[in-house]
Image (cartoon, rainbow, N blue to C red):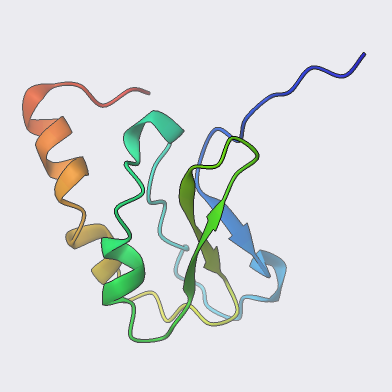
Length: 92
């Protein structure tokens, strides 16, 4: 019997096709640190982020490594992350 295990951290598409030496942004290390608000998706001018539902029906961002220009605007717009860091609630 297969037990369901949800994804744990930022998911990527075409990560191996990336031509940049700069690392791809890591939007969250633990899925509990993402509220699925899509602010990162909305600010991405390269259209490198899509919001997709996981098997539980929650929206999470997926970064396309081939399209991402590594501007990191997606990291700076995350109000949830800033709030959770300030409160000491970010999970490792």
